[in-house]
Image 1 (tube, rainbow, N blue to C red):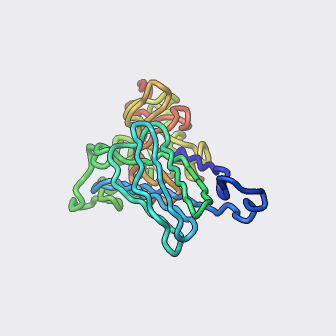
Image 2 (image 1 turned 60 degrees about the vertical axis):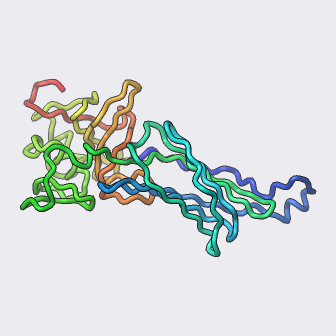
Image 3 (image 1 turned 180 degrees about the horizontal axis):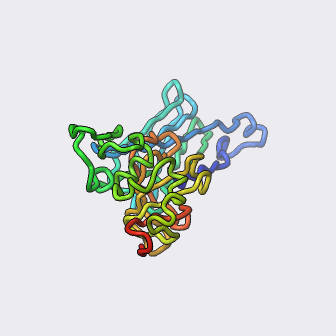
Length: 269
C-alpha cells in the first residue's frame, strides 16, 4: 500500500581524479545497499536507515522531503560493512515520499544508492481515537501498540479490526475480509466513489497494491490536490516495517475501489 519507489543509481565507484581506463578497471565499483524501516508506536516514532558497504568505508546519509532536510553524522562501516543510523521522528508522513541517499567512499572509489519511501506514522487521533478502550477493560481486543477496541469478530491488528473500531456503527453490516465490504454495504448503507472524512476506504482484492483479501482504511483527511490521508493497520510503510501496527499515510483519492459512508441506506455521504 505504501508509495514506495526504490530506484537504483548507477554506481559511481572507481572515479579517479586522473587515470587511464586500465587503472579505472582495476578499481571496480563496490556495491552499496540501503534499507529504511519505520517503527510507529504510542511511545514515539523511530526511523532506522541501514547501509551495507565495504568494511571500513566511510558513509554519509542525507534525508530530504517536504518539510524535512537532515544529514546525520557520517559513520564508518565496521568489519561487516554495516552502518546504522537511527533517530526519533515526529509528526505524520508527508504527502510526498522522503528521499534517503547514502554515499560510501573507500579510498578513491565511491558508490551511491538512494530510495524514496513515505514513512507512515500515526497521529495521536489514529493511535487513541474515540471509542478506544483501556487495555484493562474486560473484553478489550488490543494490538501490539496497546490500542484496544471492544471485542469483535476481527483479529486484533488486522485492517478490518482497526476500521471496525473506528466505525463501530457498521459492525452489523460488515463481516469477512475487507475485499468483500463494498458488496456487503451495497443496498444497506451508503457507499460510493468520493472520499469523505470519516468514511472507510476499501480496496478490492489485488487492486492498487492490496493483497488477496483486499484492504480497508479510515479516511482522516481529504486534500484539495486529490490525495487522502488514511489511518489503517496491517500496512507496511517500508519493506521491513511491522504490518500489525496502525499507520497514517497519504494515497491518491482514486486508489481505493470505493468508500463506505454509513448511515441509513439512501442518505448521501
